[in-house]
Image (cartoon, rainbow, N blue to C red; front, side, top):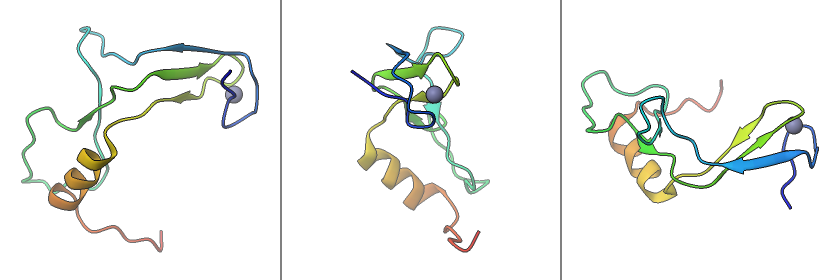
Length: 82
Ligand SMILES: [Zn+2]
């Protein structure tokens, strides 16, 4: 059974994240280089999703390797001091 990462509630349901046109949604990292083209605009959120019925937090997953490569190639270096 899943538990909300924010509030700890077990009142959660599962599903999948899709865009309003029924295509897969993507995570588009902040600080993408303005000239960096990507076919889908990010990395697909293709993992199962869990949404908390108490606080609304949604969690899901993506291909971590693909996301790391996307960030490495298409995003400005992170400033971890922020
Ligand atoms: Zn919650």
